[in-house]
Length: 303
Image 1 (cartoon, rainbow, N blue to C red):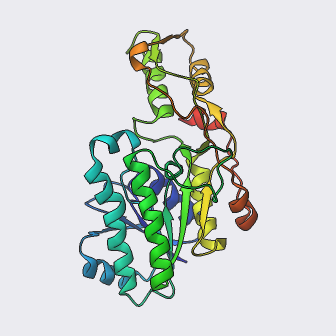
Image 2: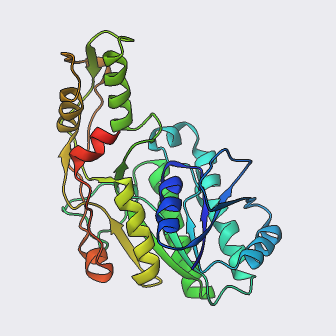
Image 3: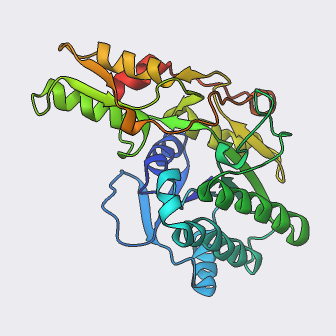
């Protein structure tokens, strides 16, 4: 099988490339600019989503069986200050990809795994969240990803593109950039361990509960969605369980040899409208056989 990963230099793209290569795929990795990523067997190419004709020719040359569309802006926090950039990266670039496919000879053969987010669901009244739960995004990032979901449906229905849309919940793992809860906590614990910081952690609200899955399980789900998923469908990718932020922090702190004091900083407290948030993975498990296998403790240790 021949695969193209857009956004291969990102956190998830790196692990997906490793997964596909280990499973016998021939893999191309698309980046917006020259990349420093180096994986044996991975072919790096530059992609300009705004140049539909050039992108079409690139696709014609590669002839991928599947495109995993990971490219995009992935931070909820960043999206509040960079709304236009978030929509450009997540929505407009996706239009560029779909247009290139639409006008290529691959339109009837290539399958696209479009990567969305649990943030598309936003505020919900019933848990666990299923694929039938109505979308009600409450931040620019979630809205941009819901727009991608709607766009995928439109191109599938009107132009016959074979698109599967994955709504991934919180994914964690070694190598994730700062700005996400596990990497931020781990960085502070490591700095204390190395004597770079005082043994005190100032934190905000730790009561929120979220659905965490290791990135190495996430990318296995993406591969199986291509191999066994149904085009035109949406699939949750999640653990189906929730863990409190407090439990995450406690596990990371307990891995340190130093005593670390945890202090609630009122300046860091923000109104929390979503105290508990987790999804159902029954659909993807039933149709592909995927289940998450890496335990949370293992993920945190590796981080």
